[in-house]
Image (cartoon, rainbow, N blue to C red; front, top):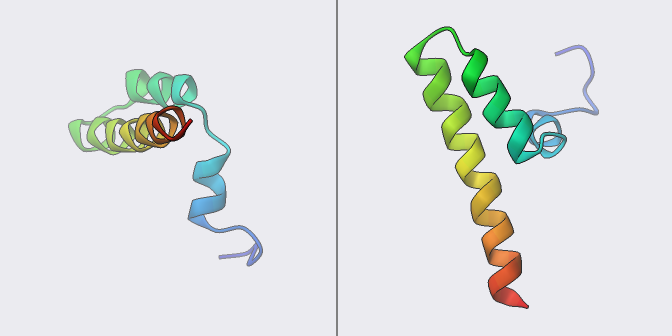
Length: 54
């Protein structure tokens, strides 16, 4: 990895739910769709936790 200051988690944090859904729509394989769906679900769960916590 060239940039040691940037990891996968940091990259993930930059994406919104809608951006991940867009990547899902553009995915070329079922495996890629599953990957983006899982990431989208993580974003939703984090948002739900914030709402429930308030």
